[in-house]
Length: 130
Image (tube, rainbow, N blue to C red; front, side, top):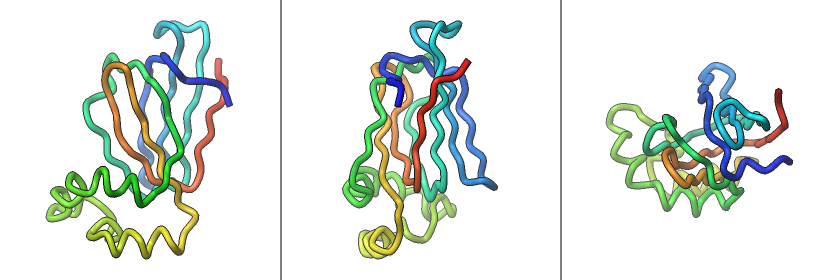
């Protein structure tokens, strides 16, 4: 997998029907020369803090899904009255049961500047792009 360290986010797309999140990135500047596509598939939930404008990525790391839930549970529960997240996010026991029965992995997105967050998905691919 290509490194996305210090890549700038060019595009962020959430496809709710296909349950995918796609980041198109470039290093060292928005005009390239190195581009990458970051695709989360089988997305079951996500939380982003900040916006993608001007974001410089640090890393996307695979982490335990329940541990990541603990980090973001307060934010997710605050959104729940508006239907902000799937029912598995309603409590620690719901999340533990869901993750115990599924192949969902947690992914922590960190940045030097800008957007950070968490994605719970079945698969992550990072590929070089033009």
